Every structure is written in C-alpha cells, then in structure tokens.
Image (cartoon, rainbow, N blue to C red; front, side, top):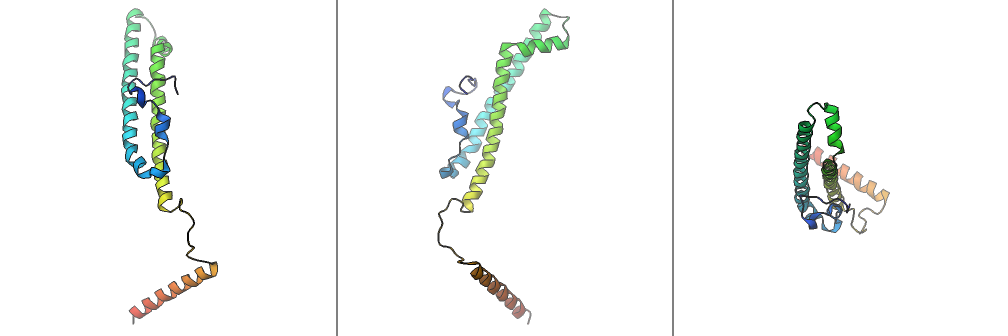
Length: 155
C-alpha cells in the first residue's frame, strides 16, 4: 500500500509484502529472521498505537476546553472525524493486520519446514517397496521375526 507511510519506520523499511514472502529454498534463513521481522513491525505498531492514544487525548482535551458542556457522544464523534486521528488510526489498524500476517507467516514457515523434513520437495528416487505384495511380505516377516524374538526371550 503506497499511500500509507509508516511514521516509525525508515523509508526503505516500508515494504511489508516483500518481508511476508517465504523463500522455500532458504528456510533456514527465513526461520532465523522471522522474529527480527516481527519485532520490527511490532515496535512500529506499539509506537503508532501510543501516538494514536496521545493524539486522541489531545483532541479530547482541546475540544472539552472549547466546549465544556459537550456530551460524551459529541466528543467521541468529534474525535472520530478528526483527520489527524483518522490517519493515525488507519496506520495503527494496518500495522495490527501486518502483525497478524506475520503470525500467519510463522505458521507457514512451520508447515514448510515440516514438508521439507518429510521430503515433500524431494525428487522421486528409488522406490523402497516395489509392490503391495512385497510390502505385505516385508511386514509379515518383520512381525514373524518380532514374535520369534519375544518367544525366545521368554524361554
């Protein structure tokens, strides 16, 4: 989103979509940098949220000083229409969504690592069991061998 500039991030650190991508050919590095990326965006969210609260309190205080008889509903409506507040609230909401996306990225990384461990990305190699009959034969032999070993132990 090009129209929002995150005020608590450097200009070259604004591209969250690129940081959310996962390079499955570099899972080690992706896992290693996940927490650093999350921390950067969490810090930006925390600072933005604090700024949003500060701006809201300032608008509230100034409006109450000018309009001492204003109702709470009027004050709330005035704050919600203030351009500065709308801007910071939009930024905070977007950053909160980005943090959720980084949580999803972490889950995606976990799943990619599981797929890698289970050789999902491997090329088909030599088949260890050539047929169902051979598999049954190997299984039966293994069960038979285990039974014999158990019976010989108990003699």
